[in-house]
Image (cartoon, rainbow over all chains, first blue to last red):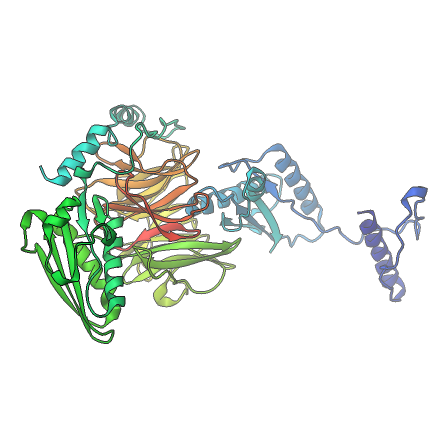
Length: 166
Length: 443
């Protein structure tokens, strides 16, 4: 994780350098990982390189549901709150989200298609209540067709709404 | 008293069909006291009250002797006999006495029969048959003797044609014998369809004969094809694509026939109209259209999920709605009028299918009671019957055209597949092996 962050940071640095000086940069694949035992922290390569001009892409975390339910629990609400805050803060309002509802395989196919869509609608309503534009959020359902769970833990993962940019 | 009346009386006596008087009373109370919407807690679906032996007593079944057919072409003779034996094995109310039980029925008798020897085995009737000719051109002569009728056959038929017709002939003769014994022609030779999941996002529609013979894929394209239904000489089904879910059929090779905004799914073809559910309004409602998708008409207007329309007799539809808080079976006219709640027991009832015979006002459905199990409800008396007993999930029932058999899918451990059952839950047999869902039966 740390390596990933360092890498992203280096890419940003490179991009900034590229933008301002029109000089190419190499990928940072050779950047050595800091030795954890020494407590050595890599120094900031360039002080005060601003990341403001480059927006972090917003992402909607997949939210999960109880059996036969489309109600959002507190962890789902906070995940959606975070996503909504991010999307609202985006400079580009061109957000277009597709919410896909899914179910565990223990229902009947037709009811689960409908239940999956109800879950997606529930997520959309919450995002709209947090200030997102409903016309930019479409919904669909895959019912239980993508389900892979064979036990309680797997079924819990199957009952979800995931978001993707349209 | 005929054997079948005796059998029914026996069943009634042991209490499988216990009149659900309490259920009826509760049901009426619900109807009269609270016809309007509200969260409800319906009383549970019936437990199996009595341990029933799998085999009914001998006197309550029709024991039918079916020796192998005779003839020079031993391969055709053997397969003809096997088809007949299997049909009567699957048919509730019959018990097959196979060739191994009777060694005396020698070829020297030809199409004649030694009823005395069969009577020792308890046979109420015997089918004899002889195969003539070759694969290219053959004939099969079949006779059905009843022990009450002596040496004069109750039924005799001769079939002629290529050997590829053999299965059809055997099923026809089995149906006619069933007609002689019970008064109603049998269901053999009809087709079933079902969906089979190959993996996440991978499902196809298959068809097979109702005895499980000749399983073949009928849907086109990859991805998810599901929710089959017979109508107008083709099999209709629902396809899930990146462009949404739409209704298609085998005649157009998987191309969109009925689609639109949102999800459009689960067709039932009743007469000249298609009935289906769609989320185009923002909520799942039942719609109907012409066979080409034109002439759209919305039939339900409720806050709940309305799905799974199926054709009933007398211009009725059954469907599922959770407008009262949990999914229950409802009925209505095909124009959307006269909506009535059908199930008042259990809290999760789905996938209704209506017996096509108006004299038997039965709806079979999947009821969740821990797992899913198969139940029927008599829509007039509110009598509930449980057909399966919690071995895995048993769901998606379908009636044969005579309603004597109910097909359903089961994921029971080690033996998932399509099963047949009698109306009372007896005579259960697996006909198709492997993962299967949403079985439907051609009429």
